[in-house]
Length: 347
Length: 259
Ligand SMILES: Cc1cc2nc3c(=O)[nH]c(=O)nc-3n(C[C@H](O)[C@H](O)[C@H](O)COP(=O)(O)OP(=O)(O)OC[C@H]3O[C@@H](n4cnc5c(N)ncnc54)[C@H](O)[C@@H]3O)c2cc1C
Ligand SMILES: Nc1ncnc2c1ncn2[C@@H]1O[C@H](COP(=O)(O)O)[C@@H](O)[C@H]1O
Image (cartoon, rainbow over all chains, first blue to last red):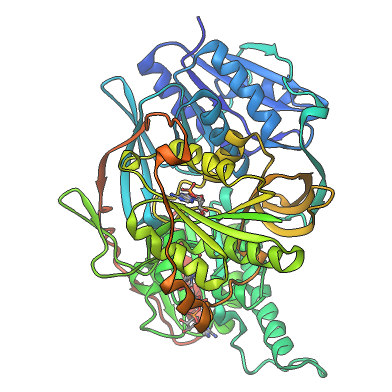
């Protein structure tokens, strides 16, 4: 009999997105209570090795769809594969990682199967035979418990809210190929590649984040190169500041975040923005440099385990949520902090 | 070109939102247009300026959602429609997208529909993709730039802002597009725009008028509460010099065992 609990493994360029493995801990817990094992689904152009890894992480069965039409992610053909399988096999729950792809797929599968999506969930429990999911709403100002009264219940799990099990390379499971269901000429979009591809650690998966705000441009003692106008000088100063943020981040293997003020001023790309209109993150350590801590910024980082704030202004709201605070100039504090942490981590 | 924008009314981002007796309240903080949807309206207006045509803004909600529609009218949208029906009180995203899709069909001959990335009350972020799926149109979500839109040849090319960078995608019109911040700062409503919007009579469509059979809502919220107060004891780290302060801070961070 088919498993009741499924996980969807998100991949990019043939490699699984790490937060996909976090689904397996939650899935096997649900499977223990609901009966049966865990089935994984992975799709792409060349993802056989992802399917095999899924077995090591705990999948009893894996459906793997390898097809040229799935080389670049497009939600429509991916959703059709998953909807097709699910309407045939009738799982009760499908878990997805909360990535841009995971969210969009869950959305479309919900339409195909006339069911509900519970996105960005931080906790799961079973009550009266139903999955009860916890999700922050209103930018984390409130917490809701939600249920989906149709099947399958489509749930995306927030990155880093669930811990991944250890992979066990001795585990075995069944890997079944499935065919793609939409032909290329029926797909109404074409992907021609990526620009400005992101390097470094992504905010979503990061255990540590170092963020910069408007304060990173505030170092009057730096002498800008000649010939820049006023706004170019500000950007130049900000880049000097973000260099310090970046150096600390690289010592900690951390992602770089930013406040909206820093993004709006053109100091750094929008992809780095943390907050209500940016990314919601929940790292173990969040170091805010030159960020005041406006409520919209808090909405994106409130659930970080340990928050450290470096700010000149002792009244800045960020200090109210910080475990450790330094009232001081980030340009003075960051270089020795980076050195000192580097020395300690290497010893 | 016929353009539609979908907007939702939400409490202001700065509002203190709390649960009292099981009800969400935000005191006397104003209800505003969902901030992400302002970017969608801006995008629609830019496309209208470039290609001509008309922009219709729609919202599914109660009477109070008219404020969001009026904001969009004040920014420069030509028409507004409120879809309102007692049966939509507990609408989930699937129901909302079925209603939006039907309303878009009823408007007819629409080339492109713009959405915000996410509504900041429920933080669901799925309605654009769901509406596209119901319509059977391409879903171009998280768009940070429209590099080309040609109503003549019915094609659109965009950059989508995803984890790995900017995905370059082209597709056929009609299409559903959700936008993110990089698309461009929303304009402020003009004085004339505000005057015009305040006088506007906004047509209301019931479910029967839209002519759609919607599913029963399947997502239920049995419990909603304020998060437990996180008691953080803030420790201000200081020292005789920045060097000393940094050393102490480094030590304390290491002691937290988060590295
Ligand atoms: C609808 C809406 C959505 C929003 N969404 C977001 C969002 O997603 N994310 C977000 O971040 N904001 C968001 N905001 C904006 C938010 O309200 C704040 O304006 C923004 O977070 C402020 O950024 P900041 O802290 O970098 O700048 P500021 O508030 O200007 O703070 C700069 C801080 O740097 C300190 N400083 C200056 N120089 C130094 C120095 N040399 N060393 C140390 N400290 C220094 C100052 O004391 C100050 O506290 C949103 C606002 C609205 C209205
Ligand atoms: N009730 C609604 N009426 C009109 N548009 C909506 C409604 N709910 C959501 N939307 C649109 O869908 C986007 C995503 O919303 P959500 O999926 O609820 O996060 C919003 O930014 C709006 O553009």
